[in-house]
Length: 123
Length: 132
Image 1 (cartoon, rainbow over the protein chains, first blue to last red):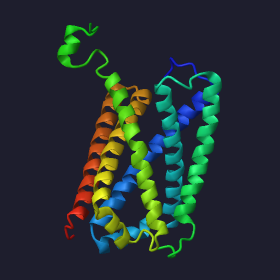
Image 2: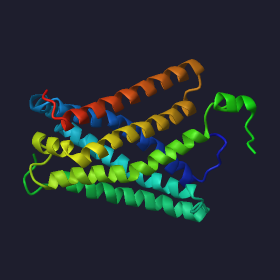
Image 3: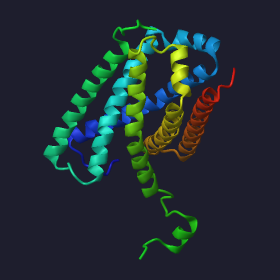
Image 4: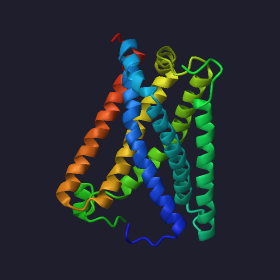
């Protein structure tokens, strides 16, 4: 890492991408916990629900959605770089802003779809 | 003409013990995770909007059907793989004491395999309708 000379945009987006990746790695535990709870049957799931439906859990979900959206968009940017395009300084700076804006938009969209009152009522 | 040394070719890796393979696997898993994660999130959103939300019955029904079993399994396996690769890079970058680094890498690998196995088993249990 010390051999790279980066602009501020690249440095920040790189670090944040790494951070969001780590957050998602922690989220893996939650995913597996949820899947296991469903597999364990109705009673076990009801117990797990006290955790999974708690306000703290909802906050964690929001964090995971934010981290996931950012990591997805920043990751796509990386894949595009792997093809060789978009690496001029001006392009990289522009795409850094696109990553931030797109991930915020995605987060709002997903959070609204999941947390705003749904037609059938929430749970 | 390959520039690899004879010893490198015999061992299957060069002095760095890995490198391009890790990088390529990271790219492959990333690529696969784009459609997989989009599918996962849109499925969750569809479940929520359909009424009844993420209740036990709704989630179980969704989890047990054909496409979900396949795609969820792929999500868990590819996601855990991708995460394992990423965490490996983080450990290698920030943990410098070789004893701690080895321990951290072992822990990370074991945890990721454990998570992946637990995830797949849970999916299969629901898919085969095994009573719990």
